[in-house]
Figure 1 (cartoon, each protein chain N blue to C red):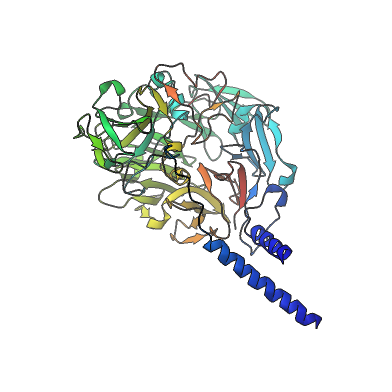
Figure 2 (cartoon, chains in turn yellow, blue):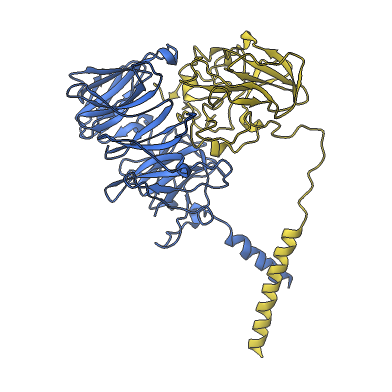
Length: 243
Length: 343
């Protein structure tokens, strides 16, 4: 009799387990609250193709990179010493898509750098602007023209204009309408950044401030920079100290 | 009934909770899948490295209320937790019996066994030691020039700094390592200005460059521990052939690795043989895996399975132990440093 009871109890538990699993799987997903706020990650990647050795790979990330640190007084002086965008390595001529709905603001605006050609799209609804730099040719768009997220807006190029050495897209996220603040695109862009960071990146990590060695050491934990502001990474106690 | 349901839920939850934390860690049985073990907490830290003897995972930190320094965790006794190993950050650059101290314009070697130190003419650059530690090599590039115009000067000297000699100058070049006691692995642009990147073996006896591999965009060449092999990857060649390659440093045609092998890589020694560890690049993968490739046969085997050993490396931050049996990595989920014993 006791044996029968145990078996019944076990059968009951198994049934209950299945019931719970079925109930769990059948339960509707929580409905996301409708909001007028922009999504947390409003941008998509600027390429249509998936990443890979034939298409594109992550190059230099945004922020306090070792490479930027050693060029803080020269190349990156006017962006407070940090790399103020992300570099995505891609063969010349790769179609670039708008990362969000927007309005073309400027084409080949020399004051914004990123030669030989660049494009700036405003996203007033998000309060951001995006800059696409080192383009292959002058984008065939006019200021004021509306673009949709995912629409091809330019072709990637090479800052050296050889298309052999280091072809890449330099992508910036700036404030709107001022466009003087630069933000880390990584927390704003829908992508699996840990997968992207596995390969292709310049692989030199982030410069350390030994007075606060945990600061700015993660892909998504990097400071905003304002044009012309003081150097953010002129550390009293840096590591590494030399190239 | 309700108690049974709660108990069952608890059992289900616990049975899916992996990896285990440091306090729960237990040595896996030989046949069981490897289990990642957490070494640090509080989102600490990045860029882990190994003690020269491979017994400790180390990292630079200044924990809240603590001292700045190099901290370490014994991989065989993780319950002890992190301890301060050295307050001198330069100790993170110990190679064999030497510490390299590079400052703005000077490079100093410190021999740990007798404390003697001397300057070498590397002008603040890091140096690479020959396998027998009798010589050093370094490269100097004028970084103020645009990358297109940069030329790397490759230098070699005795370990005491004497007899320094420029052995090569390479456009857009770099020094990758010592193939043997009398040959260096050098990368750079083809001097005939085709724009292609070339890997050479540089014989120090006569300065002769022997081509090992070339491609339009050849990246991240890494020598195997024995110096017999070099791995690299190529990208964006419209003619195809993009991905990982291995080449023998004694010559011969480079071999393309299978397409599914493209990913992050580091070398490992297994039973005295060179083996390539690969984390395959899967853009949407929830977890990473380690695979191992024999450079001779190109046979590739999985070392971990994402379903059984779920982990994900943050920011490409992982290091193989000197003995090749452990991986230290930063876990994406909690940004702590974890360790994984490889089969």
